[in-house]
Length: 205
Image 1 (cartoon, one colour):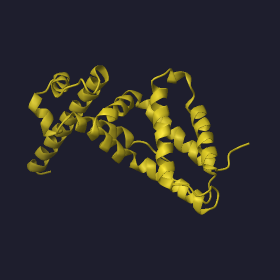
Image 2 (cartoon, rainbow, N blue to C red; image 1 turned 90 degrees about the vertical axis):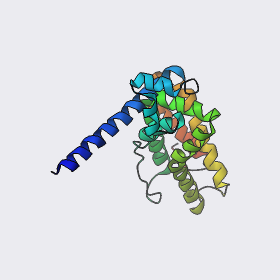
Image 3 (tube, rainbow, N blue to C red; image 1 turned 60 degrees about the horizontal axis):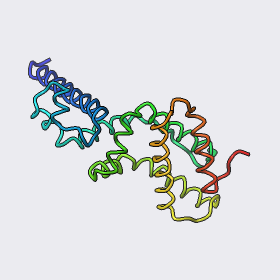
Image 4 (cartoon, one colour; image 1 turned 120 degrees about the vertical axis):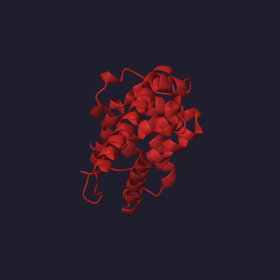
């Protein structure tokens, strides 16, 4: 292997390690100080790196939080669905179980993210970008149900936002309570019943 290629790989590895160290320090700082009280100085002190190094990787702390959440949310594996062949209730329950389980595994970061979005417009914009695939999944199921005549015609955009917001607010409240005492599959089952009954999809007797 040419020396130049080896040096480039070493440098790339150092760059990745430095970025990861900043993100890990940012996560710790956001959790312990809160997003709004945390500063870049706090993050870099925790990372044991020079203040200016932060700006080689991120423009501001909002971008660092976005990097953390993007990495966490990208690992959610929602199953693909064939609405013509699957039971809608079973599919919705499976999606919700995956969603809630992932939030539980990243609960500390998700609480910071949701609370930051309330007061910070940049985080709100980033949140909407990340949640787009979930909104598309909800919208697709509603449009399919209307097209098949299973549910009555409704305002798809309003219904999509309402269901997504209901799930997010429940999640934030749940993560702030004694969530460990609640079974995620039970939560997903109950939420799927509410979801499907509200739209008019058939549910188990």
